[in-house]
Length: 286
Image 1 (cartoon, helix red, strand yellow):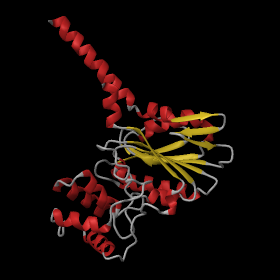
Image 2 (spheres, rainbow, N blue to C red):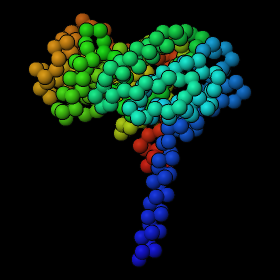
Image 3 (tube, rainbow, N blue to C red):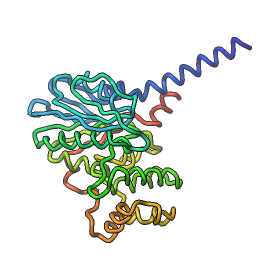
């Protein structure tokens, strides 16, 4: 009996190890990205590295620093500079990419500082450059840069209210995208006209690209009208900070620009790739 239990335990451990290995951040990057003969190959796309002047890195999430380790091993001196935000205690040793530890699930000032640093890097990028974005679970909270007029404290209040009211991750991110300078396709907008490769580790069931970390490099399907429906559904009219309520109302009235949508020219030079997900881990376990 004891021998049988030990055998079952060994088999279970092997199954678990396969599942974890399939979505190991560093390994996942090196499986999805290849560098050969001055060509960068990513999920069926090939990029000639020779005419690329600079390669910048930006992004965030609990696993983004580990993802960056794989990227640095692949590109080495080809990387110009980069910045990532990770949860406290989730940093990694990197040579070219700076890591800022920040608050999760409630954002803090370090997350804001990290995002401001990312924007400074993205503004340097031009049409001859390449931006590689590394995104993983927790990216929404770890990349908190509210629009002008909304403070970090207001953003924190929104996070607490949405966490407490029972909103789904999709609803949560719909609101966050519409009060952010980074989320909802805005990172792609900031990087344009540079070419952008967005590598994602998904922790969302079904892997909807615009929901993972609130889709910083993905066309946003949600609208200000959707935000208003969420507010009404959970009766949040008097629970959100006035700055947030006012911004979302003005957006629903068409007085504030929407997030970048499908068809926007900024996405013509963007490749979004999921390099790890719950489904991949399950398949590896099977």
